Amino acid sequence: MQAMVRYILRRFVQFVPVFIGVTLLLFAMRAILPGDPVLMIAGERAISPATYQKIVENNHLDEPLHVQYGYYMSGILQGDFGHSYQKGRSVTSIFADKFPYTARLAVAAIAVEIVIGLTVGIVSAIKKYSFMDMLLTLSTSVLVSMPVFWLGLLLQSFFGIWMKKVTGGAFSLPISGAGGPISAYPDWVHLILPAITLASVSLAVTARIMRSQLLEVLSQDYIRTAYAKGLSKRDVIIKHALKNAMIPVITFIGIDFGSMMSGAILTESVFSWPGVGREIYLAITARDWPIVMGGVVIIVLIVMAINLLIDISYALFDPRIRYGTNRAD
Image (cartoon, rainbow, N blue to C red; front, side):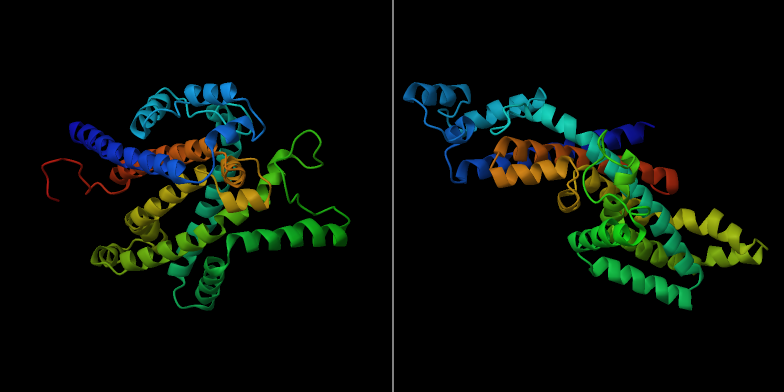
């Protein structure tokens, strides 16, 4: 237990320079990008010199860059990521509204990835070099090579437009938005196409990793010993092989879940899903830098937290892993 606590504390310390580096980079980019931040805040309308100076002083724009950075970091530590130029709201409140939508989409997508990806990988490994294996391998190759936005448009065309014409709307699916009182579909139905699109590439990669790892584990001596003891193929795979093959898969799924929770810009934009990714995309087009910077900082925090959880979960699947600071193994 003490070794685990030391490991967690050490990882927290390692996160500090990464977080500082990201915020420094973002702050430097904001400083060198063209455009007058005062005019962005004021909406580029005609303002008096007194109003201009007041905006400068309120936002510390007359201070040196390192002092401005100090104010920015002080605000972040207090949960204040600034205020949107365009919306006049705090960045924290904006993302508080958007994050539940992204979380719903990420959970749905990761569920699709886990169920389909693991199943396909296990079946391919068990039926190695069979017609089923070749068919599944070909399918995953197509998904990996297909751009996410293109797959999203294809699904919209087929399920939202073509199926609606053919069935008169009986079996069509919504192609935009997250539902609501004016929608003809339940809210969960709006998740289907975006979740499949978001999970498409990831489930293909998950299937490939699962297949390769399971095949490698099944070739080990202890697996042959398990068969020699009279265990059934099902028991060998479930009780022995899968547990040892899951570490790389858990790593990929965990990192992928972190990126999904951070907002999928392409998927959310294609389906007009009102999440974090689409909000950041709209902020970039509007040059609303507080939202962009706040969104990236939040993404970094989410990814670091999930990476820490992934590392801790290793011990649950592989007891050979140790977190002691003085061990070389």
